[in-house]
Image (tube, rainbow, N blue to C red; front, side):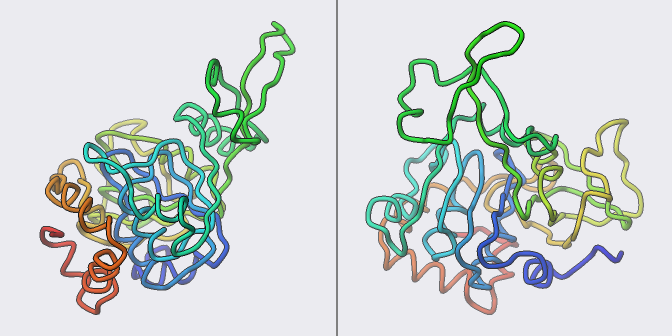
Length: 279
């Protein structure tokens, strides 16, 4: 159990000002509780990495945690824009942020390269796109075997990867199931890995090859039931769709946003948030 920490201690011990941090999870298992703890600890100047920045990055950006975002799509799924993200890009509020925008395929190639210890990833991509005119990190390379012109992207090797999962055993092996994104790749690419879990079990009942995040890659684990709310954890609870819809109005106004964050995230009774609707 030496890998186990209270969430606040895990964040304080392993995430520092100026770190590159990737909070990953695709549709479900989004590590909201960990992101909220980063906000509460007022960690600053982070490079935040995520394939699909959604509400948790909107909150972190709006609270001044970020100085740079590496991403491939940003929005409130099924609803619209991330207004705190837009305010930072368009108006430098609460601070100026740098953006490094790529495609989903390019982010995956960057993660896979980082996990493999390679300096860059390759893909067939960006043909007919003007994204390469706006992001100097997107380059091209000639295949040494066929001469084909391919896109190249720099590897992503975060200081810290943060993920949420359903279960971990007492040794530190992690089991997650349902829709899986790039959690394995980002865990292997990062220097440190923090995992929040719904449940700690004596033995994982994982089928063969299903435990894709073994104990040897995990730095810290925190037992945080409902730690993915308002996203969902397959087999544990459903997505809080009402909150995603309501976030649009909350986040449009700087004042409303600050009021909501101070009441629900920065207050001393924030833990009650994860056990109920976040409205």
